[in-house]
Image (tube, rainbow, N blue to C red; front, side, top):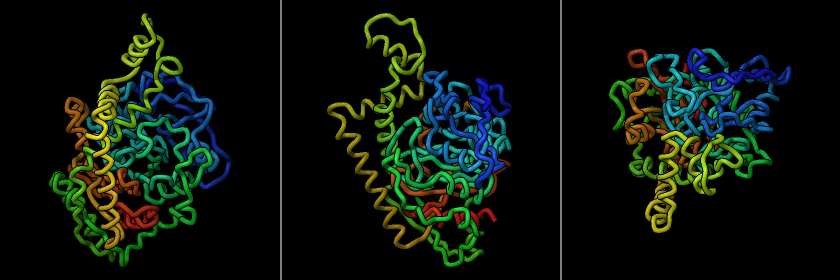
Length: 433
């Protein structure tokens, strides 16, 4: 194993926080493949920063389960991919190590929070990559960089060794240049893990790579009209062309409306920020965090470490989450958000009684220019409107390239019922073809 503590800016696309070579086994389904690992996944002996100054020099003593599985399958890790700080962002610009460029258009964001992972694949700096998806953080950068990204059903892939942002929402997912390669990586990382009680064997009999056969004859695809209304016209036109392709290959296209989606973004951010407030309380300057010259009692030193270690977006989300959980506001915000989440899940369940797959543009816009969206956090949050409902409902989804608008990639999102990964992979391979 070799490792370099490199500033992310040293890389041509600002892809890696730490460049490191860790060889896997000599054989296995991923033998000869290189892989980038998102920097919130623990890697033994290789620093794991979460894109934050708070963990700038943290070196884990163990591997995340997904890291062990890809190494056991023969992949070679080539680096820890840049990300939005603690996975909080959709552009990779909140990273303490600087923004990642989009290989498709260097003046544009690559998406986030797994922007470094998607950019590594798109730029050819890794064959495969692992990201994590809390509200679209695999699908968003997959769409913006023109690659394939899968968000699995909650519980299909172990979260052991992942630095937590929002436990009930996040899931590790693969990124690759083709649907088949992404599905092959999912075959490797999926399955129960005794270290993660949320995993189960729901996909035990599945063969994801084999499902990438493009056979959509007789498949019914429901187009979510609620997720088209706010999208840019050029994005919708490109997305609809992919639907025409599916129809030409034998799929039936119908329209579906899910009333609950009007409240999905608000519910998602209340829940995610509340869980983040709790999870990030561990970064107290005792076990983790930068050394400071702060004086005073423990509370004053605690505040000083967090002031120095966290960036503006992380601070914002901690404050909002703490407020939502505080006495007198829990029922007003957090409980209502959980009620909305249950409504979203029920709406999806009802829709899948009539269709096999649901579809929408992955992102409602093309990749913004670097620096364009940081001054407007609310607009940045609304950009997640098409992806966060899937996480609220704990369902699987895939983003596959649908085409481009003026050279900027556009993604088609396909959503399946619980443990319906094989179906969305089959449909995505038809879009790809």
